[in-house]
Image (cartoon, rainbow, N blue to C red):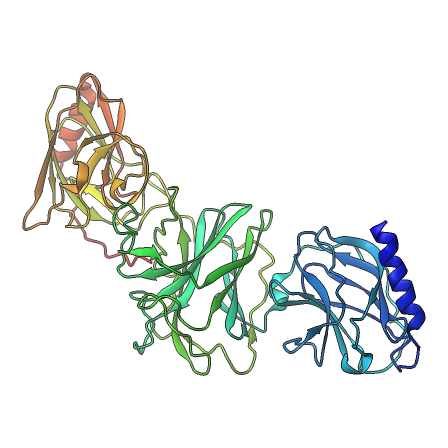
Length: 505
């Protein structure tokens, strides 16, 4: 009944409209910018128009027809109160009525405009006067979204792997990060250094970290980097690479992950002016300013823990960007999978058995057995994350010189980091981060497994995730195991310890 009443109103309005304007009779196809919006626009009379062969992807909110002086639609306005359905369309034909008082003289461009995301999804120019529709084959069914087409500027941050898109829409800036070859459970980040700095630096920067936990769950979160450590979630949640506390200036707008191509696009908006004093910065769009970016793996923990970005997957100190001014189109949309990192052949971890004294340091983790890794890991008796074999009833001593921020503990957790996560685990030794030591002042941790100790436990860092590995608990030591470690030590094959500086995100 409501539909019939609404249709009657349209018919009455149409009957009262003349056909005096030069645009009456115009037909032209929409230029599709995003979300599959397309169709043939026809001006019926002075106050109505139709769109035939109308296509629109489902799930797009608050799309209305706008008029604008040009295709940027930056100073546009709504011309019809008939909202397009969020259910989408495939080949539909609909007639629309201009809002009272609107005339075609004020509407040189018609735009299908998403008011929630402030995006021109499609447009057609009317400023050339009446004309016949261009000859073309019928429009296909809605195509996958092409979100990169709605931005004014883009640059390649890393060729074939990471693109940055942006548009200034005062008082906000909309950004997009497009990645290829990173897979799920990874992050890509972009942000700004302290404006007082003349060069780009990760430390004291405010960044937006984006990523996917799975194909349908994406995030875009503002972070502040106070140190190069993992965030201490279970304590202050402010030290390290942590989400910004207080008001968040970042709003996730769109995400899409193409599993077949391993291409991800995440779009967000943030305010130009800071909303969190001391942990965010005003953005000067009129000049080149130091900016930072990186990408890498995430941990499997419930909280988003940025692990590392590798030696080449981050911005350089000289990187700067000007967001205002002339548009930049210096990237090509990523359309195929490109490996973000070259796979490295891994070596099985060593197994240490037949000894009761363990010297614990830190070093590189090229062969970390439970990837993705953090960027460095525990080395025990000069081996990278070995498997330790322990016999029930025997006392073992760890002498820990891994540094004040890497206290060792023994746990049932394969990832560790109890002090910075909300995981449920059983701790056997080193709870509360008590076993932290340096080369000048080592810490000592003693442990005797008993009949209640599980067959597999882990030595891990209490503060950070994924620094340690496995302990195999047995009832008695095998003779071959004891002989193997003794022969290795007699042969002098223990490699010197090498402290490997790894720049974390």
